Length: 87
Image 1 (tube, rainbow, N blue to C red):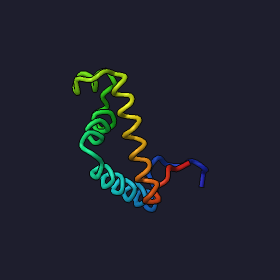
Image 2 (image 1 turned 180 degrees about the vertical axis):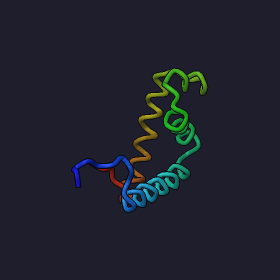
Image 3 (image 1 turned 90 degrees about the vertical axis):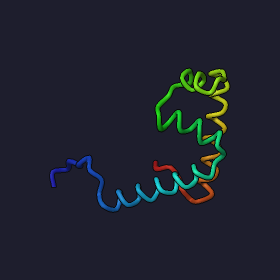
Image 4 (image 1 turned 120 degrees about the vertical axis):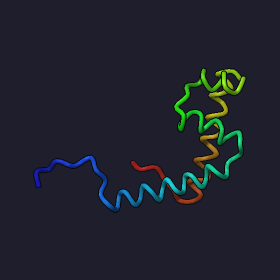
C-alpha cells in the first residue's frame, strides 16, 4: 500500500459508529424533555447560545449552565453503558 488512508470508514469502523450512534439516540431519548430540547438545539440544529436563549426565553448564561448539566447527565449515562469517547 502507499500509506495513504482513505477518508472512508472501514466496515468494522462503520459498524462501531452506527452502534455508538444507536446507543446515543437511546440514551438521549431517556433524558428529560428539557435536556433533550437544549441538546437538540445546540448539536442537531447548531444553534449558538444566544439563539437558544432567544428560543427558550432564558439568558445566555442559563443556556451555558443547562448545556453543561445536560452534557454531564448524558456522559454519566453513556459511561454507565460502557460507551467511552475515542482517543
